Length: 252
Image (cartoon, rainbow, N blue to C red; front, side, top):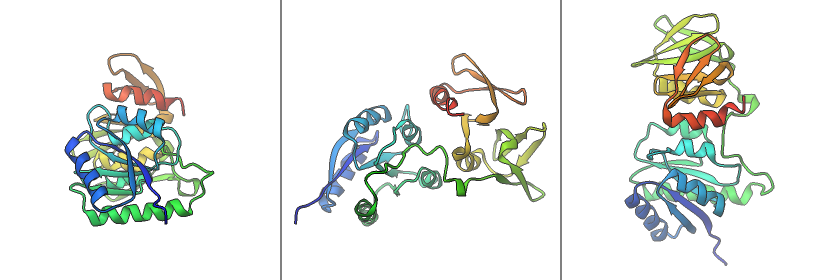
């Protein structure tokens, strides 16, 4: 029987990790043809657009452009994503991006084999005429989140997503500002809210700020620039988030 290979591109800034992954692929005869190895998100975007692989092995933490930022810039296509990272705290966010799997380094060969086995089953059963979008800006309508359960010192407070203008980090807490000019102190970190809200039209413009793009009123030019929200607040945009913000605002 003829061997069917899965085409793949590896995107990871750690060359040693790239070598280790390729070694595992060969050692365990996983049937993967590595078309390219890229050491940055920018290089990965070029190669993926050119080669259109079945699978992308993607590191999360990379300088210049992390894995999640890279996914946002990818065009629609049939490529599956397997995240490879030294940190396990990105797993929930990876699920939001419909990742096939999430492998923690050093990669366990058994876990890698299981992931590839699932991919082969999926490729054998999924239709080829309907590409799966890589850029997940939302989730299916039946799973859309309308209200956010906000944990406070008194208990849970339910807030409509459309009523949230912005969130501001306050150490281990998060301040949530609403359309009626109220501030809710939530006992969860900004990272937790970013994971929950990002698929629903929110974007983290700065380490301290997460905004509802539907309440964005104005963008002011500058190094990173600033945004003016419908509640009248003016917030800084980090330089590395500026381009991604400009790309996203056209969708709202």
